[in-house]
Image (cartoon, rainbow, N blue to C red):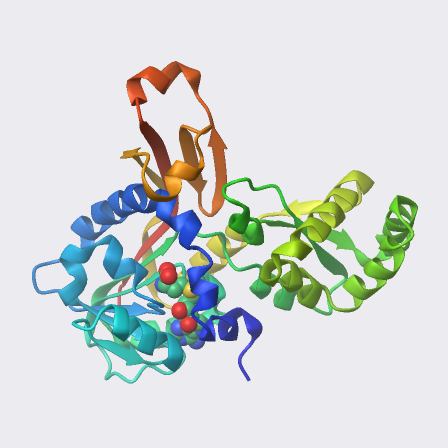
Length: 331
Ligand SMILES: C[S@@+](CC[C@H](N)C(=O)[O-])C[C@H]1O[C@@H](n2cnc3c(N)ncnc32)[C@H](O)[C@@H]1O
């Protein structure tokens, strides 16, 4: 059975939830990607995209769209993608069992996808099989790495994960925030902090500890519950018992480990950024008090910088930082 980190994408609504966030940063994000694609994609390159979702990647670099064969595990999402992009090919396939012969592609890539895979080792086994020798793997992460994978990895261990919510652009990005880790031996002490805050927090704490991922996900799915997660996140922070962990850092090291273990040499691994000046249209009209937006691999911040306001006029500055991985299969 598939884990929630992968199966939650079976419904396109979970991909569409990022639209208000991505709409702000698309122009800057596509500049980062164009640079990388120009370095790795040749005239006759055959590209396989894993986990294409609704076609975000091809929409960011439409000049490459006819070179890319999209693949997507969810039949429902693939169907929606086909409706949106009737001229582009898409195959329904899981990364764990790709319906292709060995050594067919020059490039295999993903856009905010590999962070969702619980079994990266198996995924890279397949990626490596369908890539030609000397072929390239590319991955871009514009959203914060999936926290569900971490909930699964820490399950049954001596620690428990709590949310750590700090993001401010826009409210939907709240679902993609950090985590804090508390040792199970400190749980009694932490429970006292919760019970002292309000009589209702004690029972909440008990249920959270029984099933952290379900309660965490409730906050993501139900916007009204986000304030509960925010408050819980503050109580945990104030207790001084927690250690912050960043899902992005965890994903980046796991990506590196698995690439090396699967016969890849790393060409590039790190955060790259680009900036765009955009007119205040569409969703940007909603934020009249902001003139600088930053996407730091899924963690959004917004500010008003008075020093550049006359130079910007009615435009805004958007900066997008993506985590980029490029690696070559060397055998
Ligand atoms: C965060 S969404 C990103 C979708 C798209 N790349 C985008 O940026 O909008 C993650 C995608 O990975 C796909 N996915 C999840 N598990 C998969 C698997 N085992 N094999 C292939 N794709 C998978 C999901 O169906 C979903 O489309």
